[in-house]
Length: 185
Image: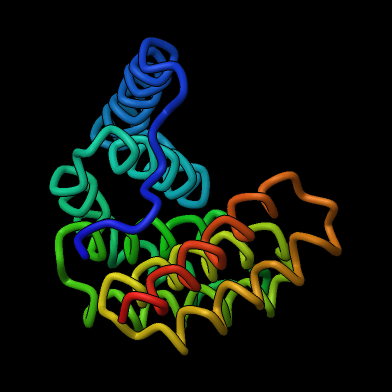
């Protein structure tokens, strides 16, 4: 199975506008940095993570991975430099793992998904943690690792129910489709 329940933007035109706006924002931040101006590293990583996420949704995961890899050292440094956890780092690592997943590098994605979940637990970012668990579960389904996938989906569902997150419907759908796959396996 290549992709399990991959998200498609409901409004491609709005998605394209958001992509263009984030590309412009990133270009401005990079130009400021190149000119010797001060650039908040966390803000830069937030834009990179957001842009990478939109690129992945647009099926440009190769470009997303290149962007993330270009900023990986900065994300690593930010992860260790500050005693304060920044949610932008969680989004960065989640996008990184998801890009790897869709490029077929699921084994490489797995420790990054795990890292993202641990970071989200430490930061108290339940909504992002649920999303990372959902993505990780989908990656596991794509590898035929159904028991582990079910565990990740159930963890995501618990969080989404607690948060009253409408995305719990997608997690329930994932569990139902997984049960169907198991019936065929």
